[in-house]
Image 1 (cartoon, one colour):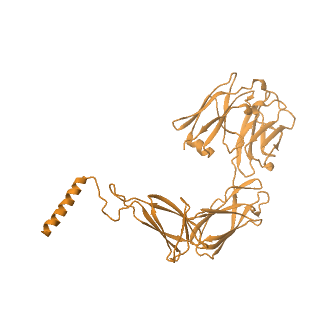
Image 2 (tube, rainbow, N blue to C red):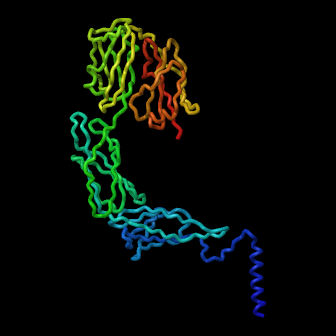
Image 3 (tube, rainbow, N blue to C red):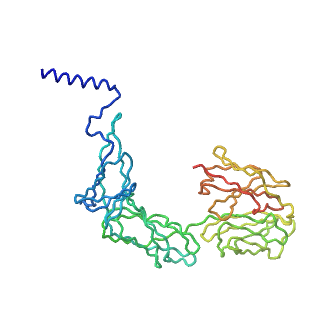
Length: 424
């Protein structure tokens, strides 16, 4: 009789399962649950457990402390990502992300508990050093005062990924109370010293082994960031008998490189006596010693412009004296910049009157002046987008087009710019 009862119970249970259908899973497992516990085990680098560590949950502002075994438990966490900060006096604060994930099947949620081991780094180490730069006038190494120095941590779990200090009047910097057992890198962003840009071209890397360690990185020399020198504009199409030559460049020029470095020759290749000087730090002015040019004569002016960072650009261009400024062309219209395959194409409508060609200038938001990019005799111009992107190192660029003829060039201040934005 006992055997018959057991058989009937088993048969009833089997029929119940069949009635539920093939796609239904019955939650008969004690581990099936919709939330999971997060247990933190906090230790130091030696493996010793740390008690009284504060663990703060950012989502709701609640906190918990580790017990004498180094554990702290957060119960019944829903599926998703939880972010915590882990802090204790004398140790570097940590930022920990924990994922609570479902591992169930069908309509049964199985959310396992999570144990997160956190290794804390004791504070107390120091790194120090000195920043120097080469004075461009004297050639002496000078202490770089007031320069920002940035220390970045290799451990991404610290709440602060970097620290910034400034050098003192001796060029010295000190990072104090740093965590042990981490790799660090030290960098210097572009900074202005005596109207020049300097930077640390290669980051300094180091590692901190012990909390009481003091490391001296010695002297590091900052490098001068050389600006590219470009011709912005000339007045060679507007020279009359009494007009001085004016050549404007994009950066400050080295004054002692002007005299004797610029030559003007006539159509017979004879050297014309001239004097060259620097005006407003970026413009070279060349005037004939006789006080005037010969009307209708054909001249060539050549030379090398040096900026104060040591970069150079060569110049060689011809001009004819005595053209009337009254026939200077007007501005172009309908200027557009579009992407045609791999090319950025500029197009515009020519102004009325005689036009010999068009100067194309460009400028980014970080630039003070438009720079001459190229010239063409057509009303269209194209350039590889990749070349432009590398040239400007920005997300967008502005263009203006200035028509010119023998009488001169359209006024840059009246030109209307078109902006082109690069694809991400």
